[in-house]
Image (tube, rainbow, N blue to C red; front, top):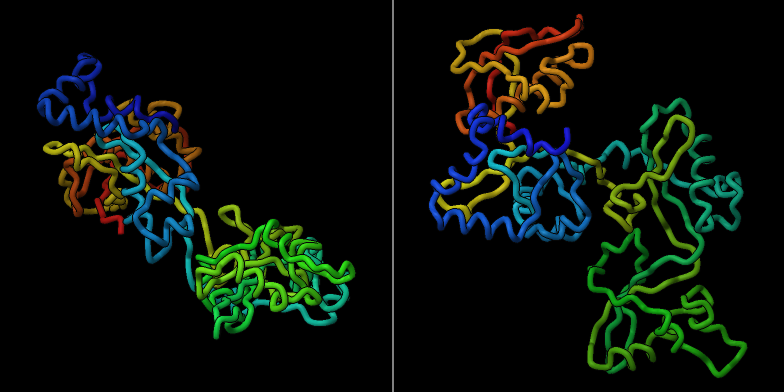
Length: 417
C-alpha cells in the first residue's frame, strides 16, 4: 500500500467528497481563520507524509528529546517507540486527519541471557586450528576464522541462530585511558581500557588523537620507534613515554583528560555471528558490528514496527500530533454488537487488496483481522472505544480451509498495550 493519502478522503467522508471536492476547504474554514493559520504554519515547517509505511531514518532519532534515543539511534523496552515515536513524527511530518502510518524502527531488547551464558571463547588450540598464530586472531581474519571455528563447535543449528564469541584480537584497535596532572606532572590514572571494558569509566567525551597529533611525537634518534611511524602506540611504543609531553602542550590549561588512541597489539574482543543455514556471518544491526563498540553485548537489537495516527486538534491546531494507535481488534464469536459496518469498495483497495473483496487464497485469520481493523479505524476511529463490538460485513473470493472468519463477523476493540 503506497500513497494512502489519496484514499483518506473517501475513507473519512465517503460519497460527500466525491460530490463536493471543496469539502476539505469548507471544513477547514469552519474552524475559523486562526485555526487555519495555525494549520498552515504547522504544515509549512514539516514534510507531508505521502506513504503508509516508512523506515525511520538514522538522523530522525536525533529529533527525540530522550537522551538515550538520540545517542544510540534506537528505542528500547525502557524507552518504547509507542511512547517516544510520536514526538519524532510530529516534529518532522504532517498528514491528513486520522491518517494511519506504519513505522519500522530499531529497538533494543535486553537480557539475552541464553546467549551470554552459552558464549564461546577461543582457547590456545583454537587459534592454531583456524590458521592463526601467537594465540590471537589478526584483525581482518575474524570472519574466516569464526566461520571455521563455529562450524567445528556447533552443528545442526537452525538458520538465524546467533552465537557470541570471545577472543584475542591482534592488530590496531582503540584503547582508552584517563590522564591527570599529579604534582604538576601528567600521569595515567588507572589502567588502560579497550572497547570491551570501556564501561570502566565514561568515554563519551574522550579526545581521540589525530594523525597530526601522532606526527608531533618524534625523536632525534633515527633508530628509535615513535608513534609518528605508524600513527599508533604499541607494545614497543608505549603511551606512558610519549603522552606526558604531548598533553603538556595540547592540554596545558586542563588538569584531567580522557584519551582515545590507536594501539597495535593484542586486545580482548567479542563479536556475535549468525548462522544463515550454510555459513556463520557477522551479525550487524543499525550499521554496526555487533560488538562492544556498538551496543552492550547482552542486548539484541531488532527491527520492529508500530502503527501511528495523525490527529488534528479541532480546537487548537498547535496541539495537533501523531499518536500511537491505541486499539487492536480481536475476532470474537459471541457478544452483543454495539455498532455495525459494511466494507465499501475503497476499503479493500486501501488495505491492499487488488479487488473489492478479500482474496482468501492469500489471506489468513490474522491478516483479515488486521485489514478489517485498519478499515474500521480509518472510517470510525473517532467513535471507537475499548469494549465496543463491531458487526462487520465483507466480501470474499476463493476458498481457504484454514480461515474460520466469515461474514458477518464480530470484532471487539481492545487496548493496544
